Length: 447
Image (cartoon, rainbow, N blue to C red; front, side, top):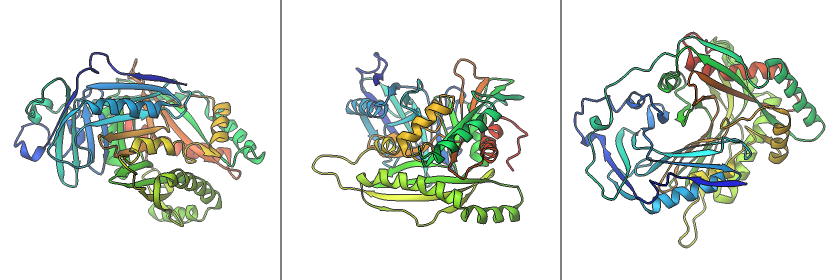
């Protein structure tokens, strides 16, 4: 079951007016340095997708599309295409991320009340390969001259420290979650599934309302190899790229198989070697890579799947990782390549966040996990008018309560196979909670 996209009635009849200009052409604005993208963001509902200083930041809301149910991706795509059909665009930069851009976030489960959302911002500032630009998106009847950056960016106001943060159990206690993992292992040994990914949540209450920019800046600095994001109250730094689609080429970074770091470089190198040869972790990783490769095959004329994974070193954990790449098949006639969102929909949920076989694993999650993941482990990212874009899996993330921004819900999940051990999985989940604990507070160790 799906619901029709919810689009503000007073916006739909008017076309979107989109103007992209190179910021280098705007001269000295006296505003924040556009090369520090996160510094440009206001505190009110910021949007972000950044990695190693490049990416997109945005603010304001020209259009909002809300969807729900099993058809949420199709409904969002259709609504976006309807909007683009009426758009008037002047793009003077012409690189990925310029022109009309929408940010999106979708629920993990078809049945979740969280559904999905596409946000078309008022202002987007992007940077890529040394080039910086600004896009303004408004609704109206006539394209106006591009504003100066200073017209849309106020004076720099530092992010607000959330103060003391108190953590409490989420839907299931730590001990209760070990029991959930044990039930998952029993289901695997009974032959119900080959692998299942089980998640837990932790509730946080901050002394002051959480300023998303505070979390974003800490995550971007501490986890530069991850994709740091903020979309509609969901914030995080995901190490896992569900799909990037650009000019007919697709890439997916698959992570499965994890070990916690010790903080000692020599010991961590030894742990990396253990992880790279762990039969349990290699089995878990193979399921995840196979699920991505099979999902991409119908869309690609060729794919490349690495024979062995590499070890990705993050400040808190080590992961087995594989970059799966492909070339999209040439579309016939007037057809276009599938959009990045369509590819994300085809890939979701991967075995890295659900399990194998997919349908059976998802049903097992619904039966034993004891919570609604909402948009945790769902696709999050952005796409443009040509359909190209980047979508990550919303991992190492937290949802800020829209009714009380002092309340935050943190998430972590672990892949479970027959050889899994509940206490070890709990320890792994704690390691995966470290990034968001660090993002909210001052004194959380990342070792």
